Image (cartoon, rainbow, N blue to C red; front, side, top):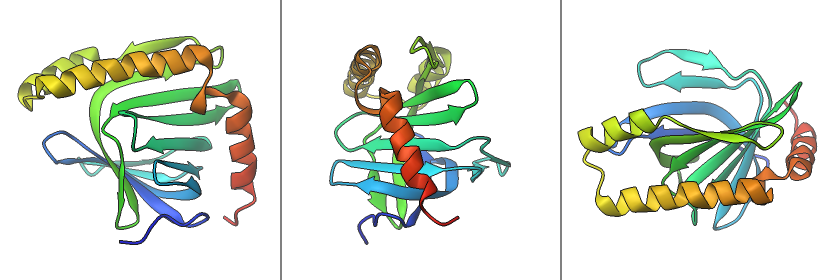
Length: 176
């Protein structure tokens, strides 16, 4: 199992708690990698859904994955500013050239003015019952929502517009 190499492509694979593959982003360029964090970028990458459908992303995105947090953050650079989509998820593992994580349904959508909204609580409740999420996981996930919203309010980590813009400039230096 090779370590992530800066400048090389990787896939992003999202799974559900029951082990089923949920979604795959075909190609993301690794911009930074440490033992606890991988930052990648993509633009107009193909996304494959578990039901066989596929689509292309519409804008450049900077993706932050962590081993020490139960969430990941996708920063999307749009004409009206940077939008963030945060997945409450397991910490990632990197194997077979892919970042892999379990998507736990809850999402936080952040707008360019840094207001945010929690999404998919109904989906979380349904899947929690269907897949029998343990109480310990439930507690960790809700604590992660709190940790994430604190980072958003503080504009820390991936929620610094300046940092995201710098990473996008770095991405532009890589050949397409």
